[in-house]
Length: 210
Image 1 (tube, rainbow, N blue to C red):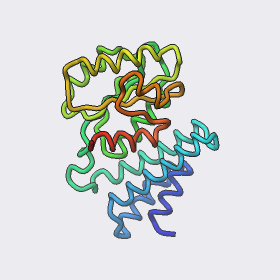
Image 2: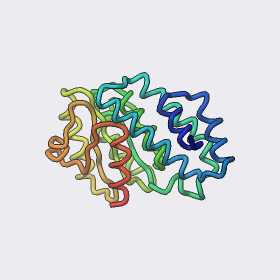
Image 3: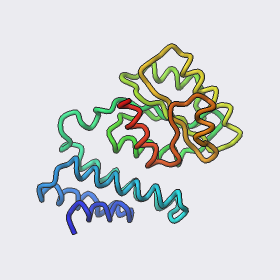
């Protein structure tokens, strides 16, 4: 088993204490930091898929994300130049009226791990706050709005429309959360939708390069 395969297996298993040492071993064995990171991102995609399929639950997902972030800490100094921040800034938050943050935190962690500089606004974030954050931060490429309650879907719509009508440009809006679907994302004018944290990272990367 290659060192990267070992890292992947331990991230998937959520072994946060073992991952940093294995990442270091993989680096010592001559693996490129980017390849190790890609391996860990793959693991998180697997975890995300299993979570979506109901084979894993939130605690396992959080453990895997924690293991991944510990691994990323070891890699950060080795990621070439500005590669770690080359994707730009992502503003993320849970929309007004919604206090759920586990999903949002997972997405923020995943986005950070694929190379976004993440500005997390927290929960119950007004449309105005999202717009201000785009204005106040440099190089915002993605705004990610999360919502888990069907009752907060109007707030998500309002947020997307406020962002679109703000006169600010250069960023794309992605939405996600249990009640959100592609059809709904289209209807409220969002640029993208992701069913889970792994998907959100992939979609955000796609949109940032678009």
